[in-house]
Amino acid sequence: MSGLDRARLETLAAELLEKQFQRVPKLRELHRGEWIDRDWYVRHITETVLRIRLNNEVDSYALYKVGSQDDALAAKLAKYLAEEFGHENMFVRDLEKLGLSFEALNATPIFPSTAKLMGYLRLEADRSGPAPTTIWDWFVEWYSDRYNPIITEKAATEFGKEYVHGTRAHLAFDESHDHDELMFRTVSRAVEKFSSPEQAETYLTVFIDLIGDYFNELYQATVGARDAGAAAPAGAAAVGV
Ligand SMILES: [Fe+2]
Ligand SMILES: [Fe+2]
Image (cartoon, rainbow, N blue to C red):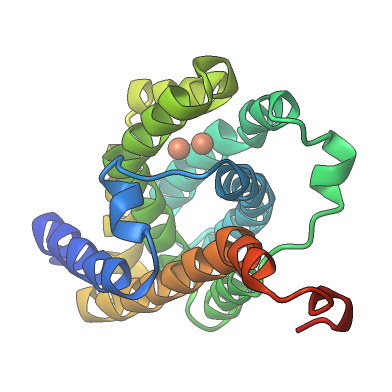
């Protein structure tokens, strides 16, 4: 038996996120529905699309690593993948409405933290099979259930509900397909067969550190850069300081 304890994993996820709330500017306010910024939001949804594409590749690779070793796990992961492919298009519609073209979206480089996270998942799939990827997927679904409605409603209030149609549709999909539940059953099975509860907690710690790095990069690239530009003396921008 894996002995993977859902309440314990959820408590750990909340504790680790709390550390990031202390570390990253505005992160606590964002997750309480007390803060949002348009540049920040556009870049966040952009990265969401770019990360979903890479995440689907990583999940496909994890499925390949299951191979014929555990058919029930392979079926669960394949079902999840089938339901996730193409989801980024819901966010693409919102981005177009927010003024970002499909071409501009595709030309946006991912943040280093996203590259590190996706690279780490591929490396760990190579070394240890599908468990780390499923732990990440479960965390994404748990996080989304808990926080994305708050962030989305704040965006609807501040920018207008016409800008969050796709995001709301995505939340409704996850809700009706019970993705949090599906992923916990998947991660339990993956940990039982390919890993251990202790190792699962180590992976979760790395993932949430990298998510903190992402939110920090996102803040610095949008609000931070804008504030620095406004505060810089004349001529400073020209020499790149
Ligand atoms: Fe999705
Ligand atoms: Fe989902």
